[in-house]
Image (cartoon, helix red, strand yellow):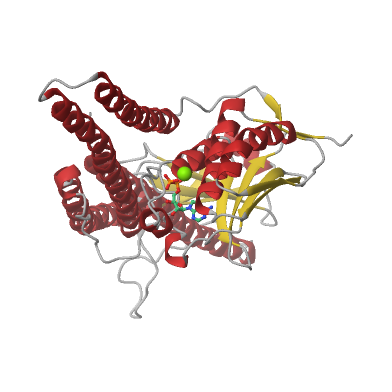
Length: 470
Ligand SMILES: Nc1ncnc2c1ncn2[C@@H]1O[C@H](COP(=O)(O)OP(=O)(O)O)[C@@H](O)[C@H]1O
Ligand SMILES: [Mg+2]
C-alpha cells in the first residue's frame, strides 16, 4: 500500500500528464488541420487556375500549363512539385504533367460519379508512389465536353512539419513534467517535513509533559489551523488532567484525615484497660468519624458514576412541588434547632423527568447549605417556577452570601469557602459539586448569585417535560 505522500505525488503527476497530453494532442490536431487546409487551398488554387485557362482557350487543344525548365528568365515561386492531370468524364487521360511520367492519377468510378454531380473532391492517396499524396479533383464545365482537372501534391512536407511538431510537444511535455515534478516534490517535501515535526512532537507528549505544545508552522493555512486545534485540545486535556489530579489529592486527603483520627482515638483507648463508659464514648466518637467517611465515600462514588455516565437515564416523571414540600418538611426540625425559618412559597404543579433520588440529593444539599450558613433568626426561602422550557427551583437565604472571588470555585470538588472554614461549619466541600454534576447530567444547571440585600441565591434549572396547572 502506497503511503499518503507517494499517493499525493502520483495524483498530481497523473493530473499534469493528463492535462499536458490533452493540450499536446489538441495542439497537434489543430496544427495538422491547418497544414492540410493550407495544402488543400494551394491545390484548389492551382486547379482553378488550370480550369480558368482551359475555359479561356477553348479553341486550343487542352494542355497542362506547367512552366518548362529554363523557359523563363523571371523569378517564379510557382511550386513545381504538383502533379496535374486532365481527364474526360469517363476517366480517360487527356493530358498530364511531365512529372507524372508513365503513371496517372487514379479516377475510380465512385470519384467520377461524385464529380459528375458537380462536386469538387479532396482525397488523400496513401499508397500513391513513395510518398502519401493529397489530391483535388474538380469538374470543369463550359469548356465544351465536361472534363476534370486533378491536381495532387505530396504530403511529405506536412508530415515532416507534424513530426517535428510532435517531437517538440513531447520534448516540451517531458521538460514541463520534470520541472513541475521537481517543484512539486520540493514543495511536498517541505509540507511533509512540517507534518513530520508535528507527528514527532505529538509522539513525545504524554501525561508527564502535557504542558508542551505542537510546533506551529507559522502559517494560517490548513496545517496551521490543524496545529491550533490540536493545541487547543491539549489545553483542554491538560486542564481536565489537572482537575483530576487535584481531585485525587483532595479525595485522599479528605479520606486520610478521619481515618487517622479514628486510628489515633482507637490506639489511645487501647493503651490501657478502661471502664465501660470510656469505651462507649470512644465508640460513639468512632461512629461519628465512620459516618463522615461513609458520606465522603458515597458522594465520591456518586460523582464517579456520574463521570462514567452511569446515572443519566431516567424514566421517572416527578411532581417537583410535592417533592420540595416533603424536603422542606424534612429539613424543618434541623432548621428550627438552629433558629432558622424555611419559607416555602406556593406554586403551581410542575413535573420533570429526573430520578427522584437525584432531586432529593440536590435539594438536601442546597437546603443544608442555606440552613447551616444562615445565622440564627435568618430565613431560607424556597420557590418553584416554570416557563415553557424549564423548571426553576430557587433556594435563597439571608446569610452572608458568596464572595465575588469564590463564585467561580463553588462547584469545584472539595472546595470550601471562607464562611465554611472560618465559622468551622461541618462539610467536606462535595455537596455543590455533586449537585451540579447531577443536574448537568439531566441537561440542567445550578447557578449561584447574591441577592441585593446580601444573602445567597441558588437557582436550579431543569429542562421541562410536562407542565400543567390545577
Ligand atoms: N447558602 C450559602 N451561603 C454562603 N455560602 C455558601 C452557601 N452554600 C454554599 N456556600 C459556599 O460554597 C462552598 C461549597 O459548598 P458545598 O459544596 O456544599 O460544601 P460544604 O457544604 O461541605 O462546605 C461552601 O463551603 C460555602 O463556602
Ligand atoms: Mg454543602
